[in-house]
Image 1 (cartoon, one colour):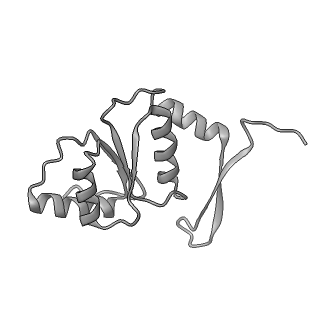
Image 2 (cartoon, one colour):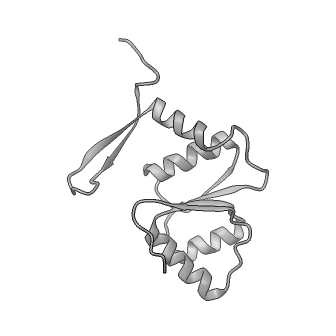
Image 3 (cartoon, helix red, strand yellow):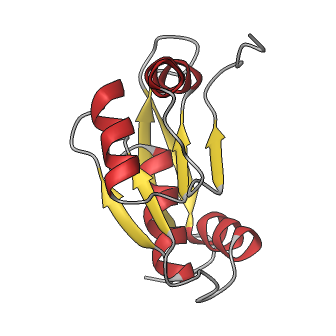
Length: 136
């Protein structure tokens, strides 16, 4: 058996995507390595940085957060189940600096945080993916 580290399958993500038909999305070692190295610096996180992971670890966002967090030296906080209240409370209590959510989650988070006038000065970056985000 011949191994090709760059092209060997690292992760199979099962998704229904836009068709509704389950299928495997293949991520190869080279895909993941390239993504991690191009987005974060090795051990480049500050001592106080923490990422809040509020998606399952088998979701691409969970995989991304784990790999980039470990590579950069960022503390990772995992939220077992997303609720807007749990997310806002964990972000405040853990002084979260980085997070990735989907637009629906972001809207719910902002409803709670904005409604309570919460200060999120510790949050350096929040990214989203998986759909369009409302400008409202």
